[in-house]
Length: 379
Image (cartoon, rainbow, N blue to C red; front, side):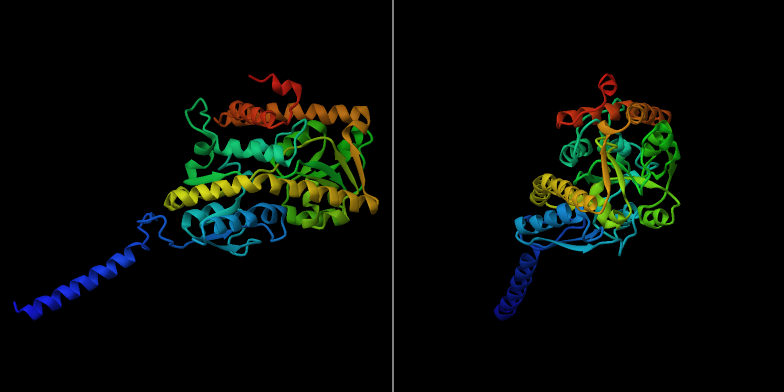
């Protein structure tokens, strides 16, 4: 081979190697791992949410979480968001994750699907005292706990691992109250007159024990049903009223009785989570922890504003302690019976009902909340 030909071929080889080396630092492998996690490669994540852009959890937690992740990753992470169910309808998030339509569900709503997620309703169990901050911390600990149940599995493995999902606890809802369009509970007979919308099986169980007639329907249908007089009210947390216009209709609310918290999760598939570089994973987890309490406080602040404004329009808020003694006893007795029925329901389905109830109780108490005395005696 002539010297000029050899030089030409070596030049070509050097050029090709240079191109490959330059590209190598920004190439993502088939499983999503990068050859250099600090290469500056951009990670684009598609996020679906059934929440409206003004929803407290979206505004108070998910938006600041995404902003912090983007900032602390120096722009390596980019989120493309779809709210109000515009891409994926509420209830279809699990399928969308597993099909790859989206990368993150913000949030996934396990309480709406107890067949797939039987343990998640535990956050709806009634408590003696709690608030969104206490319950939010407890719920994240529940979802991410390393505690092993008698079957050798964690809560995460039982509820989400079975579906290939990695889950984290964002904020949780404000505690549920009982609100009506005007029906007051001045005697146990008034409870039996009431027809209320129930958002979960646990509220149906509670309704049975206190004599309230329960109706199952989506929240989106509630305004029309109450406007027509088809039902008298609902179990709902006050901070969510303005999202549906309920502040125009609710005229009577019993407070001082905690009828549970609606829990949801920030979710992605395990494969997607494992494809994200470890330093980005840590940024994501830290950002969740940084915004959980502040996002929970938003519910508290909204509730105070709503109570003040609706009182000015004639709405009545009654503390449980100030209700008729017989009404108070019925409402309180229903709390303990609901825990036992929930435990029995899960145990009959082959689930660790008692174990998960005790774990939730202990986490709530650890964070500063309380449960009925009889529930503290569960072992």
